[in-house]
Length: 114
Image 1 (tube, helix red, strand yellow):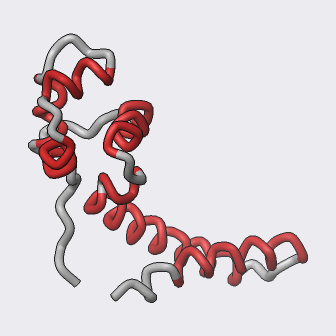
Image 2 (cartoon, helix red, strand yellow):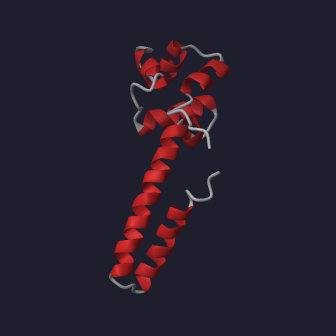
């Protein structure tokens, strides 16, 4: 598996024909500096801005922030495996069985990635 970039903002902006100033305007900010910082991985946008960028470029947030998405997917899967271990040590009631099934599905999501 090739390592993904933190984000693909610059590529999508270039593909769209928009300037950093155009994107800044669409985001409702005064300066293209923020857009530049997002594109150069110097800053991660807040969720609202990430959603706006996905709307601007007509892609999902996960696609736009591929590297960040993959890193957080791995981290969350690891946390899910840890939580499963804790729950299984304590014995499972009916509610915990459903919770463990959900957590195992989260943990397994990283194993199917090529």
